[in-house]
Picture 1 (cartoon, rainbow, N blue to C red):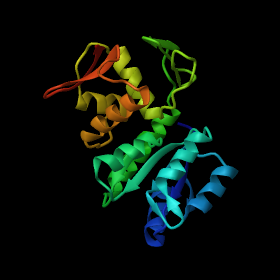
Picture 2: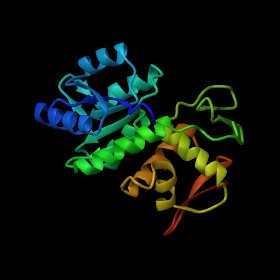
Picture 3: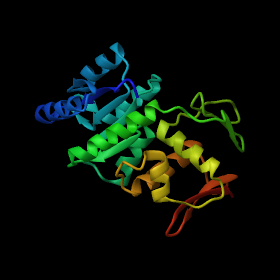
Picture 4: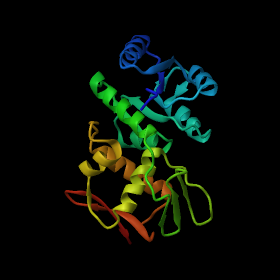
Length: 231
């Protein structure tokens, strides 16, 4: 990757913000910092970023609403949420509003850097051919990074959700282990809790509006992971 990647770090804790800023710059990354939703919004309006590192709790709002706005405005930056919240509902909400990954506080700086580098690699990676995939009435355009339903309406998936859906479609009928899914979607160099896969599958099912009666579904394979199959 020729461009090291532009990062927006949104963190209201001054000491932590300074530390993370220095660590990221030491890695040769370009970093802009913000301490609130308002200051982050101003920077996002003025420049483009490859990655937003987003604290969940901010003095004038929360990371959920800012992430949702980033996606609504069509910005392509990946979003890594930093959160002390560990309840499934909180994590699922983060994925639903467009987060690509999350990191629980407290975290190790080495793990943060691994997540950051993996997300930047994925943002820079070319999407392989073929261009189009079909799944029932869904049409997935891999080059345009779009999923369209039978009525022609776009289903707003995050980049990670789309990568996950493409993997399942290309491996339809095969039981994929959580570790295999993590390696192929998140990258082998990134340490991610296996429960992340469960949360993303749940979020993806909701966005696709799949129910037990839908023609396709993700089936849990006990002791392994998931399989995409016809209902």
